[in-house]
Image (cartoon, rainbow, N blue to C red; front, side, top):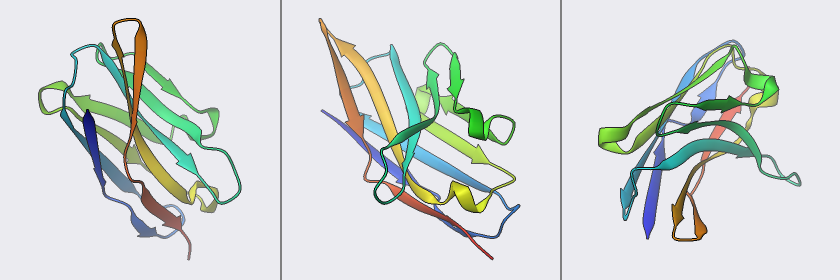
Length: 119
């Protein structure tokens, strides 16, 4: 089992910045992908950004140039630096870890942290 604990959400004005953190603990393999998804009421959970342990990244088009994902493999922690925040970025942000165990992918989620962009 893997536990993910997120921190760093909150209320910020348009144009502001926030950094989210997610620390993973438990049975973690060295080869994995950690990332961030977001969800608003009544909508599906969508990828924001993800990063493999080897450093390969993937971003949603809507956040490219504004959000930066990074990770500290020694600490099993992933970060999401968000600048130039817009009201449309308001959502619950969920940390995600995917790793392969044998023939199957294990998929873990954090509890979510609210990000609200409003004046």
